[in-house]
Image (tube, rainbow, N blue to C red):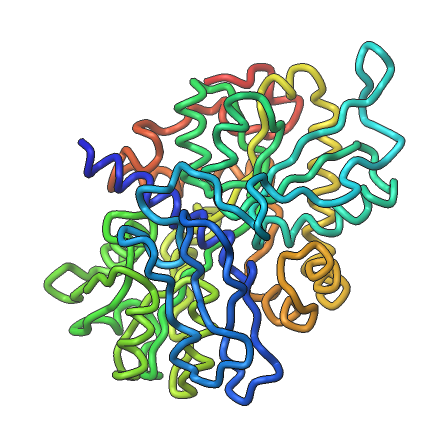
Length: 422
């Protein structure tokens, strides 16, 4: 039971790391000759940085080195046993809060006293926050209908207790963690949108690999046995008619080890999340993305099917009951912010740098298109997410908290959400 519980936490933390990892605290050093991806060393024993390289370090191999402080850590994740602890960011013990977070005089709804309560929004220091920076900026300038307080953390597990205790109203977290939260909260939370799609890719120097069936007879190196990425890979292989006899999955303890295999054997195949994909390809020009697992998922599901979902947005049902209009306004403003991130990359990159998510705006501009920031709500969200969670549940029920959420989990609009419970 202890092993299964540990695997569940590792699965959730790995998803969280993929959300936080796409550009979070990492930069391509434009001043070095190699252009290797480097990392700001984040303080705190709970989390290994996905990529560790000193500023100006010309040894490309160091760009793919993960910290070794946590023996049980999944690649680019909060270390196994410390998964429930808060990661320190910038030398502070509290979650990072954006300066001037409360803004906007007008609101969707007022409290009985006539004063508008700020919505408290938690997100990860990565793609979820990158999709929010325009909203953050507009709120600071008083240009939003709602008032907001934004909190960014480096570890998603810090957001769960805050939601359960009522200290946060809305959080942007990994999809399977949202289902776990739903089960822990006994249905007292709802998912309101999808904010990030898949960030997993197959990387190789073998350019003959064009589809999943081309993996037959090959060994695929990846991390996270028994975690969500493993479930995704197993599902895609099975749906493409491949079995364990056709494809060998060899698991490494961290993404840096997978990258090391690819460095030695470019013709090998490795499954990596961003930003390790960028790092591996920067280190070895023979390597390239051969399979986008998000695209492969959609090919299997077909039109109208589920999607490979990484991050979703969850709200406390108490807020839905007390101030549903404010939630609906948040959805409008979140949609606008995500669209701005994708349509105005240079401007968003500057905001990302100012928010401290990525140090340099030019690096943020390169990272943004790779982070699959999106906004999907309503029935489309329900179809995309419910099918994804069902795939995970079929392989390991505990990966989604032991049971699939009921229809009440999915907020598809005020007219269809008379009850926010199961």
